[in-house]
Length: 311
Image (cartoon, rainbow, N blue to C red; front, side):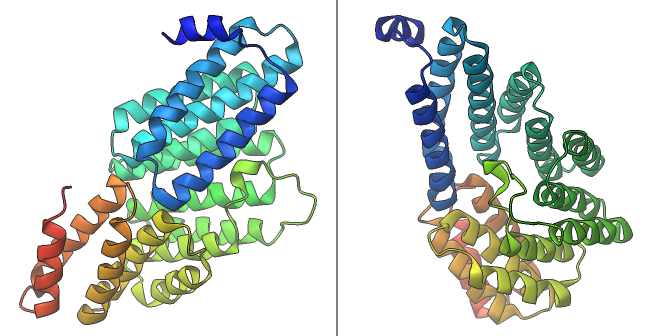
């Protein structure tokens, strides 16, 4: 059906087609932040198939290079939607496809981006050594391509996530220190790829807090995550739900049970407005962490509310 429609439409590469595709991608980024990625998947995969058809008919090498870059990002986005849905095998398939498109044009900076996604997924699959190896491979690709300080900072944080999952406190702190060092080198005119511009000071702050929370350093983690949430755009509902969960988790680590339950309740309310099985799974994780405190009325009430959600 896709091939038939592509032939009927006479799909071909033009500057307007390339601009339209890039605008669509940027819109997907915004909608993912605001509402989660579940509803985006059909559109992203359909557009990826469309682009693959256009690539087949493209002759101009400049158009072909641009189209490969667009296809790489659409495949990465498709992988991200499956990752957020906790469908890791499907996600890996699309991430691998994204790598192939990026390798076709030797875009080592974008290869680093996809490896960073695979590294994050490995932390969710309880494969911390894989996460560390992938993050370091991403850094190698970025450095070889003259990666910007912002990109290197983001990749160092991904490595820190891996070390924190492996409970290697010293290595996690080294990676976080490296991330802040790189971030301090950011300057106007660095030429950051559009896909890494989301990694601003707010994101660095909250991610640092998450790493510390994973290391059970709740006293240092809580104010950082709280600071990040204050600065995070209100429209980014998926990010706010995710970060609110982490704030509640660090508060619970500090045995601030009533406060933690109130904060987790905020995350639960945000989750109702988005489609992100990954965030829902984090709330069920919080419910399990509440078991020792079920004698508390607030903990029991919140646990019942979370249990009523489909995991």
